[in-house]
Image (cartoon, rainbow, N blue to C red; front, side, top):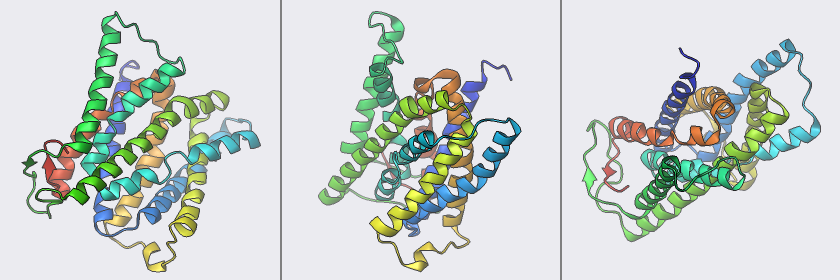
Length: 303
């Protein structure tokens, strides 16, 4: 493949990986899997995959060890968007999770503009296009949160339909709350992409090791949150079975934490953070189709 086309292909692959994560994670939550337990197992699975590969790569290339200051930065980076996103997913839908990701281009663009990583010429066609795109992203997220709209039939009728009929006032208020919390999680994610990850990679360019260490820290933090904060001490909640919960953990840990995070770091390094964020609306289209077909989600024209 032409080297100039590789970032475009990688960006599409990343969106497909995230589509799978939204669908299988939501299916696991629908079956009753605890959100905090899922997050811990996901991070742990990614750590088991990445850490040996990262240490082997570091030894092979004779790179310097991580300093304490850098480890501290990685620890705080791992805290970004730790639990908020998947807790919000449990109370909304896979389609909404992908749809709120449309706020990523707007938030990432704004942060890049503030940090002077992006330049906008208001009178140029490219500048007008960027601002128009940002406005559509924000309008779309507000529509998803506030406007329900008429029902669209699911693509598959072999699954239980989710949230049929008109939502009650309490359901609507909860939907709006969790949708906006998901947008907040996306804002934290944008900050991580634009500022934190880019700065860390300049300081220590080993993408694989940086990703692996963040994954290990995130697993430890998730365990503390699950046990101490969420008070999830029922051992039966921690037991993995041969069901969609195990599939969600394995997929999210290996494909998302292992593959997608590394590809994101490569893509940001090659084309910049705004380029990567601009592809997130594609995930919304993929997830809407997949969640309707595989989960039987009843999709509304707004939501």
